[in-house]
Image: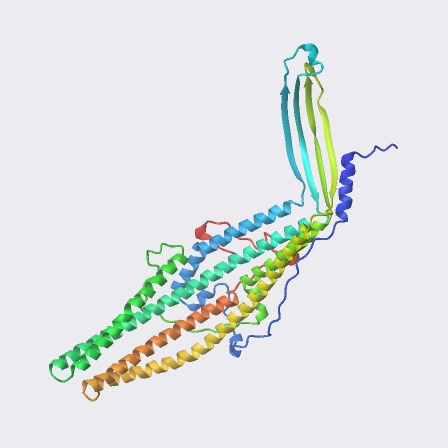
Length: 497
């Protein structure tokens, strides 16, 4: 049996397969680590009884207005929309890097015609030509050192970081809406308190004025009463300004026109009762917080790019092939269409580049170290935020209980002081001092309730707000397109699974 010799294309293809089988394995990014304590020092033992940490944590405040505002912000906020666009960019970049592992195939076609106009005898040496040429051009860089695969995985890690960034943007938006909402309600409450006491103070001033006319009080008492009323009136513009600015900030968070109010005044607003929130272990933050997941993905991306930079020292193998058909006509002679082919296998290895490759390795190594340090710092800051939030919640609860008792006692003392002053048993100055103390207690109690609500919001934010990343199966904890899908729906209805 007679065998036919191998064609150049078959030899090139066989060589490529052999060299590809001898190529280095794809570099893998390893997860960084940092030393953390077993538990949070400021967490109360009873806090682990039940946890309210879930993705819709804002529903737990029991405020329908807050829930509606947060849901609207998550679907219409521009920061969330921008983060979604960044995911699209990162995934497109990952697809572009992955395409480098495959050969490129292009179609070439050409038509040419040449007429000299010289006499026929001369045309024997300078013929008129017409050529029709078409073919397929193949080009392929064989990834011997794994540099292209490292670049592909680094781009996928960038896409994972961008996907976590969407969850981070949602968490920031939800927590900021909650923060501004409670600030608004607190400002409205304090405004009502000051306005009520200011009206009472004006009544006291009118009473003192009538007593002055009757000779029962002095001009000093009248000036003092009016001064107290004026001082209360002076606090009202600042509180109205706070109400207005929080309204505009909420409008921006919701993607609305800041010129239109977002929330109507709710005189029946009741502060939410603090709930138990299990903080878990500090190591849980690495899984819970989207900003830490994004920072960890960036560490892996930069480590993979370091491997890509080191791969520049390895030889590079290039395969090119051009096959097609050509129809040629010389003068009046038509030549039959012919096939043509051109196959080449090239090897390029660096010998001298004046330190350029080594400098690139050093630059990328520094970037990888910077990403690692940034991740470590982010972890420590995350633990700090949780510890601070737990401490604020505990201390503000004690402060609020004490202020509630203080306010109750001072309200009773005010009732007695008003009765005694009407009977002439105490001086007006004593009544004014009691009124001022009641105002201070009411404002301090309102501020404490605000701080407790803000501490709850901050704790939810510090713990990650119920963020749960999808499991990964690829090296370097790189998310694939299907493992962390983000819908490309219109801005008004964009949500994450």
